[in-house]
Length: 494
Image (cartoon, rainbow, N blue to C red; front, side, top):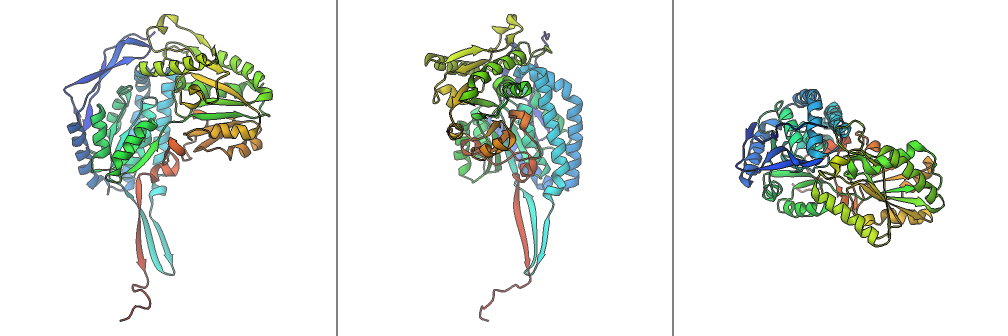
């Protein structure tokens, strides 16, 4: 067990300076809710304005800083983050609830994106010069200005880095607002990165809805990068409309997994990947598989083998214990929501099966723990199927033919990721009919994510892309400089 430590106190970061607030909020340990891990500032709307103003001032010089210097600064920042990764992972696990291996993986993922983005930035952002019969054209990639980044609690470090890195590399300045459910490690991370950049280029503010309103309505903000819920995104879109801000929205998902008739139900590694895609980070990942559709002739055998695989991998308990694979949920509201979905399904005749083992029963009632569950015999239109659970439960449902499976997978307001499991060419044919930003073959969730490729959703899962070259291009405007040979229109009278 982890010993209690002195609570961490983080501050806003405005124009290169730590800024204290008159009020603070506490962040508890999800594994033991009576323990306070640290405190974040309750910044005001005035603080948000100061941060935006600082970012606007810094933009005038940062936007014209040579790309080589931007890259060098980001590379130095990445090395500093790697050096501090062990301590950051410990803090992240304490405030978030995810097991240490998961926190370490999140920070590794974040630094991997830092490395990838710096390596490709110069090539992606270079001018494109064309000489042609009509003259010469120069196409440049110009930074947009001040960026507001609003990030969630489930992957606070990775999802902040996803926005910070391309914004700064492309010459923008940025103001970040972390979630109050995981504000500590990400704030320390931002201080590390900001130490390598000019004052005002990277700013951090915390707070309640009034801070978020300022970040989404202030006319000096040119772009909003948001990861979170679809309901909040609708408010952001309305707020951004007044000044036509550019938006990148990575929203919710209710990602379907289709198990084809030729899937090998005796493939233990594949079954383990499916289980992990359901319950990694206690199910609190937007791109986790959240509903599984299985061809009816293999349904019973699949369920049997799935339960075996789940019982081997799922070990619930103290996030700092090396044998634990599933920690507590992040907060009490999420526990209540997920339990409500399970109880609703059970009241409508579904069968609820507990999965895995609880290793630390003495902790279970002290924190936001839930033992993962499998839902069988759920209604196809039941809440646990059509809503994004964002927690440790998953329904498995049978289908009779591929047309039905595709229709069921597409019957959602969401379209973030999906997966198809079976013989490769067969799976690819089915994948082409699924409405999703990404469809993975024989893998799912983070196991199928490639930073070389663009990531984003369709339908109400958002728009715009992160990662890949598009992850940088979403932070620039295309500027065409045209030098025609003929400076007059033909057939115009003298």
